[in-house]
Length: 217
Image (cartoon, rainbow, N blue to C red; front, side):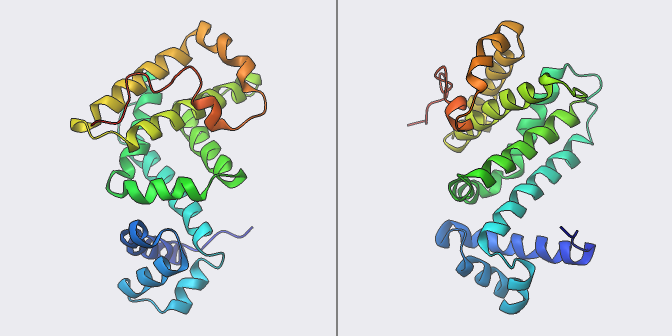
């Protein structure tokens, strides 16, 4: 796998930014990318060379860019003086707020990435969060921590997508409760049997994770 040149990465970012406004109407499709290319002043052929695998490749890039922006935001705050659970909460919050202006596009992206590629994207996100939080585990805890956080992140994402409370306060309270739960030793032991094969989303929905996070009416 080759690494894109800086200039090509900048062009991909520019095309992604121009495509995002079209996604709520056209979905993650070639039509959206072509429309974005027009808005960005690119030829359709150039846009297709930037994302030769089409919309699926752009969705992967969208997720990767969100992770990059999250890490950039975290680099600007002093994580060392925070408890681990607070570092994790800050990272999850940063990750969601990165896409605050594109919630519909994010919702549609999660629908596109429902299979193995979606699981890989989620794993990359939670791995980046744990590394940013200072995790150096290389034993079994490496996997359990990331699986547990994947559940927290997925449930919080679904909460956030349906939250219209002021400042998304309902989501952040929900996030704090979920992190407090899984960071406790008893919480970890209670969940280990659930870490066997099965969709991460199913794990995320265990134990009624939406308690206190219902869509506002």
